[in-house]
Image (cartoon, rainbow, N blue to C red):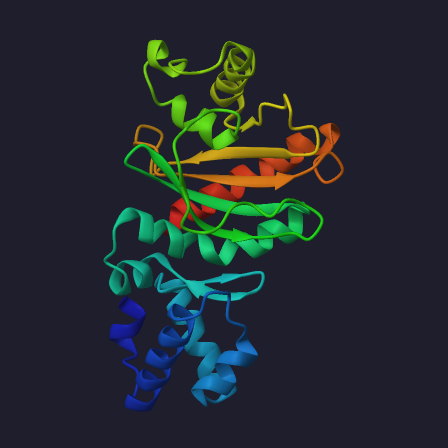
Length: 243
């Protein structure tokens, strides 16, 4: 903020700055420099200077695909509930995650004991995932089911869980504790592979949501799963940092 106090922007520069913020905040994908140059009408040198200040002050972030809303812009423009903030924070990362992993990327919010699909980017070679807005109870089998059940007391985790699924459940909960991610129960799902990581505002905070990848044995072979999980974990941290 000191930079702005020492060098207050002129009225035209301020108008261009507000136009930049509006363009980025209303976009569902990262906004490239060329698009901002065209939409704002600002001179190239002015745009470069304004973008540098907005990034340094936390209003914007510069990613691989362009500019996205920074934490200050999200807080200022979106005084929303946590689920809505999670949806906005995750949206710029889903397509990048899908392309980098070769699998469908999806994010779920946890609301009132159910997981709600709030965003996805579908890879044509992987799985489609269910429709956005659909809700499910944590019935196990899926990584989001295991992650939600892991929040319960140990005696409650296996309640209403079929005996045949308990071995997979124990493995998933062990993986969550040791690695921070887990996979599907593969029984009966030979053509489907899914992994998930929990989303929390801090290590002690309640479960906010789940970030997931969905594919098949070809897009998610055993030898690449650790690398995919690391990509998922790093993306999850980027999303949480923007909430």
